[in-house]
Length: 478
Image (cartoon, rainbow, N blue to C red; front, side, top):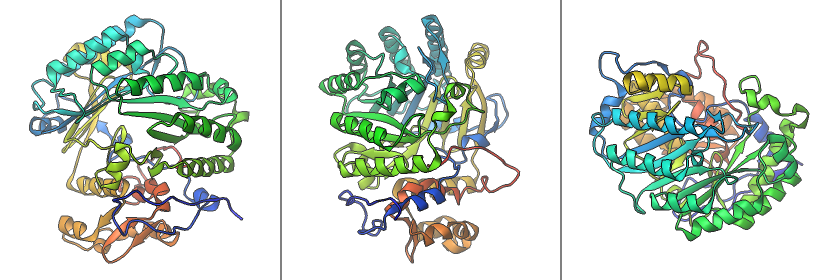
């Protein structure tokens, strides 16, 4: 008989009709059927579709809409790391020369100045520092960054906003926690990946549970209201028993949120991954078994599965937002602080507004040269069409609220769902047959076990994905 995992009862407040009270089990066969490559849909269209775009181009541009926003998100990309993690596919720079980071910060703050006359003085409800390793910055430069951002943007602080930072527990100390909290940061994300020593050696990231436990405790003492851990399954040397042991350790530390990512081994694209011994890589069937075991372990421990890779304790704000239908999604994943627009600063950062997306140069050298020359580093983006906006809304409804109401489709298109999206519904029929989606006289909705396959459901509505002349490569769903 196939391995299977059942789901816990839904959180209070989840709309009736979206939950199967007795959902069929999730099986290895079902996971294998939908495990192929698929976009993650942190945007629509996805970033690989962006085209050349320059701030000097004539006509209206997506950033012009920033003048009328009422709320804002900020993202700052800090690409620096002290050592190389072999699994990593992020935009990063490995160095021990701190001067590179200090001069990079000069460019970021100059880029922020470019937005001074282009964005309304709207409160920043969400701020995220990502990388790389943002805590590569010393405490003085962390303060300099926040002061510089505050000179341009409205940073209200307090418990009504979410200011988060990604941190490497191997190089984060109590003094920096003090600095971050004083600067208004209230959410901390720790990159764990795995606690097994053999797996850690295989990916060149040695980190002890004691380090993580101490930081978690110290963060909570200082008033960080949410601590999340990033974990990965499918790493070299992993198997079900070793992953379950890591999860037991994680559960003892009781993070508020857990992101359990599938490792995409693409050494032909990412040079660092060529340092991994391919003989240690688990097979696809082993990875599916790990996913099932990990999901069972986390839900048995009381964590709620929010969809995609995300789990949260029932009392966490993200879980409450999901239960109340307030969940949103952006380039940082799921969030409870949706804003009218996002300004991304730094190399490779992506911004968006109601009119589209724009992205900075990927390499630090090209980014720095562009900032020096013209104060911004935009090199590609996308102007949203009316059809893009419709599909963007529909995909986010599925991924965040798990349903699309027929009445909303008719109000937006003037057509019934079957007329407006006939080809898309045909693509979804296998998911309906497998009990992952339900189409009734009111809604198209995702069932409880269908949460594992949100990317697949969203992909049916991606018009660019189904154009044969638009090839692209994506990570696997599982």
